[in-house]
Each structure stands twice: as C-alpha cells, then as structure tokens.
Length: 348
View 1: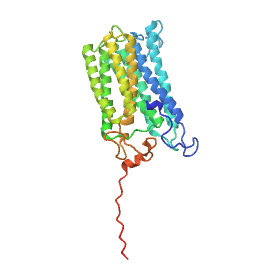
View 2 (view 1 turned 45 degrees about the vertical axis):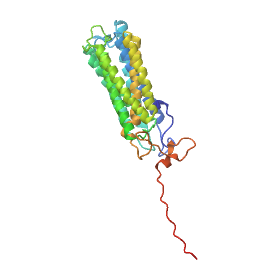
View 3 (view 1 turned 30 degrees about the vertical axis):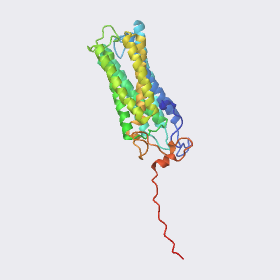
C-alpha cells in the first residue's frame, strides 16, 4: 500500500534548516503513522472487550466502579475493559505528537495549515471516542452506540491515511472521469458494507455481556444482506480496477476477498471468537486500504490537468514513460505541425 511503502518526497527537497527549506517531515511521518496504527488497534481491542464479555467489566463511567477509577476486585473482565480504556491515553499522546509535528513542518519555508487541520480533526476524534465509550457503558452496551464507536474508528482511519499520504508527500494520481468516479463509488459502497457489518455485529450473539440488548434483527437475514451488498460492491471495484489498473485498487480487491473469506468462515462455523477477531482486524485493514485508494484516485485532486491516456484510465505525462521510451509521454499530446509550402524559385 503506497501510503506506507512509497519512498521519498514528490517535490524537490530544499536543505533542512535553511531559508526556504524543508523541515519536520520525518517527525510528522512517524507520528502520523503511529496515530494510524493506534486507531486501527483500537478496533481490535474494542472487539476483544466485546468477544470476552468484558463490556461491563467496568460497570460505570468515567470511573471503573462507583468508588474507584481502577478495576479493584473486578477480575479479568474488569482488567480487559480497563486496558481498553487505557489505550485512550496512548492515542491522546499520539494525537498531541502528531499535532505538534504538523505545526513544525516547513514546506519550502512555509507552514502547511492543511496538515494542522487534519491532525486537529484526528485528535478531536479521540475524546469523541471516549465519550461514546462512556455512553456505551451507561446504556448497558446499546448495540447502536457500540456500532457508532466502530464507525468513528473507521472514519478516523480514513482521515489519518490522508494525513500519512500528505506527510509522505504522495500526490494524487491524475485520473480520467470514468476511473475517478468508479473509485469514488467503490469507496462509498464499501462504507455501506461497513455499516451493514456493524448491523450484523449488533444482531449477533457476541454482545459484550450476557445481559446486553441486541438490535432484534434476524442475524442470518442481515448477514446475507451484508454479503450480497459486498459482492455487488466487488463488481464496481472490479470495474474500477479494469479501468485504472492501479495498485491501490488491487490492494482493495485482495483485502476484500480475504475479508469475505474470513466472514464466511465465521458464519459457517458458528461465530468462534478467534475468527471474529480476525474479521475485526480485517475491518481496520479495509478502512485503511479503501481510504488510500480514495485519496489517491477518487477526489478532485485526481482531476487531470491535461487530457491524455486511455479513456477512464490514468493520464500519462512525461514522467510516466516506460523504460527505453523517454519522450513517449510527449508524443501522446503533441499535435503534428502543418507542412508549410516552400515558394517556387523562378526558372532561369
């Protein structure tokens, strides 16, 4: 996935620490990737709380018990729930570090307010998650509040992927309208798939506590709807891959097929908790992969500045020439010059 594997800057670097130079990028890359990984891990730890029936291991909020902030005498369930709460402090530290790093970035001697805005949005998601978690406990694990917890995590992952891309200075890829629209449709349809997965989770037996309420929907019915929408989405994703042939779409195809396989395994094996845990890891990975695809290919930043290349596919420029064909990119857009007739010389 290019958000973590692409190397180097996409702009001509200036000497760090000099007027008009670049600085602070390395720190921002580290902090933003750390924040991304931390928010992806939150999906797994939240799932473990639910799967081990530890959702009410700390039966109140913001304290763990009426008399203590720590799980005194609450056993293993209390320790698991309290451990999940402690992750919030790690995420806060990562968010602060990311914000400070974004403030210190210089791009050719200038600040980057867009990076600061993204870091602030991501940081505000952390206290929002803490409040949602508290409401989850106070409502005795209401499945819709639990689902909101997961939806916010997915949104934060998508935002942090954009921050990582900009920290690594990975540009959006120029793309014709058809390819760009198919990528955007794939992204939003995948978000619908995630929402339906949240509904399946709220209807399934792993509620976080034996006394927790469920949505009341038939789990088999909502699971089948979830699967059908996924396969319909894969048709659009396949079309996006056919048109763009972009590696970002390829990663989404691979991740989605693996996630679908895990989903079928958990469904036909009676929802064993270890397979469900792998499925939740898949949710975090899908969120990152589909976000990377969207920011690379599906936004206004991917609108080409010149028209060239196959219909719907990427626009080729001089820098996209294959080895041994330098200048081919220019030939795609160069119009032949009209021939100018030479005047005849008089006969002598």
